[in-house]
Image 1 (cartoon, rainbow, N blue to C red):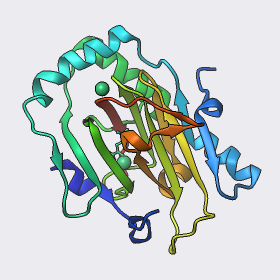
Image 2 (image 1 turned 45 degrees about the horizontal axis):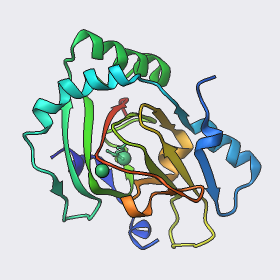
Image 3 (image 1 turned 90 degrees about the horizontal axis):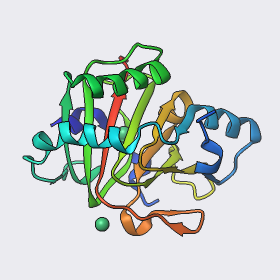
Length: 219
Ligand SMILES: O=C(O)CCC(=O)C(=O)O
Ligand SMILES: [Fe+2]
Ligand SMILES: [Mn+2]
């Protein structure tokens, strides 16, 4: 199971707790000096309409026969993720490889791991706060959101849960690409909010089944 190697959940965070338009798609909470806001914005970019509806269809057509054979799972051992199924894929049709090459260039300057991670989150699925393992993944994580919008929440990693600590909600629209790096990748947990908690700027975002196509670089 891929998730078991990849996620590491900081203890404190288990407690409750151009085409880049990050500005409209980000909502900050807590105490943010403006210099840190700027750094965060450049480390958590969202590119709207990175893929077209046709490109989404072609990607889903290649993914669906494999992923639909798997049951949706829940991980019990660390409580990090529920209602998901996932696969890795290295070899893609030329059309889909062309999309992935764009991710590789735009997010990684061409230096990306050959295995692409596909995560299928059921309508009622949720990904709890975690930081991707630094043993298996480098400074950048880039994901295309397919089939549904969702809200990703990033929370500053703290030793003690602090209600005033920094967090940011990021709207990830269907068809978009997010590029999370450096500060946002290492100093913040990320999570995908449950359907009924997917508020963004006072609007409940409609969340259905969502498939993400995620690229990472070497540690
Ligand atoms: O679905 C996503 O975009 C993020 C998934 C995630 O956080 C992970 O697989 O580590
Ligand atoms: Fe993650
Ligand atoms: Mn639905």
